[in-house]
Image 1 (tube, helix red, strand yellow):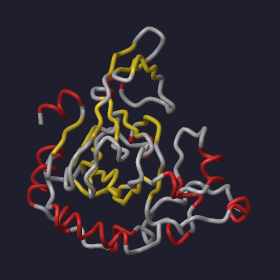
Image 2 (cartoon, rainbow, N blue to C red):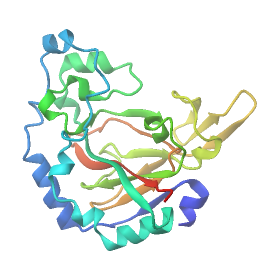
Image 3 (tube, rainbow, N blue to C red):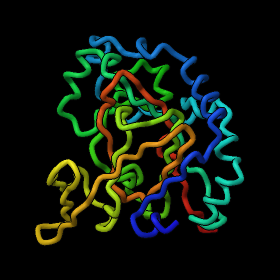
Image 4 (cartoon, rainbow, N blue to C red):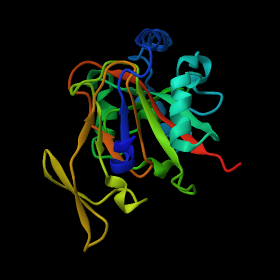
Length: 254
């Protein structure tokens, strides 16, 4: 736990059983043809204003339909959550996320999203397939952005159902970037070189940060503070991945 306390994140290698990860991954992949999930351009243009209802939600969330006892009823997992949050906590949110391969995304979608901060692909996806979250790269952000009225009293867990290497769109995390607390997106970052950034709190205060690629085998879990900056680049090879993302746990004041 020393890394979590000092730098705001932690890794648990091979934390979950690989066979269980393979089994649930196979079930996910069998639910759809990932090349046939897209709206037609003309249908998107007719109704492209709604952005808040394109992600998984209660009643339209694939993870709710599959057996995840190997994660959430796992004794090791429960004991770990107790150590971090105390023995009064609950699952606040959970879903599957997909890092898409470039060839899977229609050309017109690539054009519309090439200059966006967070190209969430949900609004381009057919309604019945919005039970997953789809992305092609995502800018550095804090998870507190999803809960702007909450205190930073939760953690985000991220579980790899695939083996994830540098070519498979691994998350890139900036250790110790929670030092300035919750900040407005987009964040004031300046890349010094491929191995470091300056993170600005204001005009007088900045901190040098060093990116950490979050790679790992099937069953690896990372967790971090809600003000930690993290993002990802599009997968560089023709391999997409499915993970359990932003599995968030909240302390209960009971």
